[in-house]
Image (tube, rainbow, N blue to C red; front, side, top):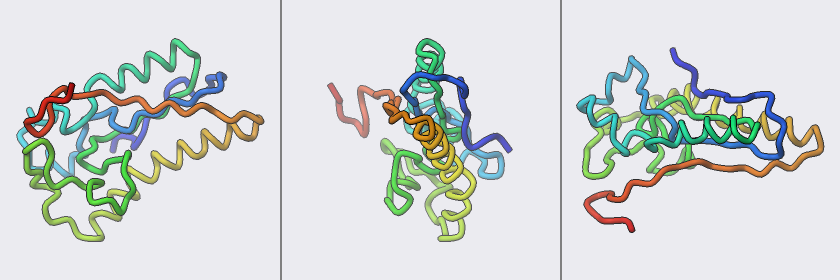
Length: 155
């Protein structure tokens, strides 16, 4: 299985930590494509297009560490509270997500333990490392923007 997160520039020393909650469009093989056409995974419903590359580039340019989520927001949205209904989206931008329609509590707990928790534990550990050095880091969350969503223009 692919990692739940990626660390870029782990030994970076500036006072910033970059995070990217929607860096990947990957779906674990055991979940197939969540019942979607594979082409849907290239769209904004699955990830923030370009955000992972931007976070990597910024980390290198600034010499700062970055933590990037390793799986699609459709598996579990790392930018939501686990008890938020949107953490396991049943629909996105007009597309039904078949693999999320009938999740049990067990299914949710497995996804949280496999993808969400390790990502957030890594971020907490990185912040802890800053604090042990006496540094309060600037947290930079990298996202991208889709100019249309659910049929509405977003200027």
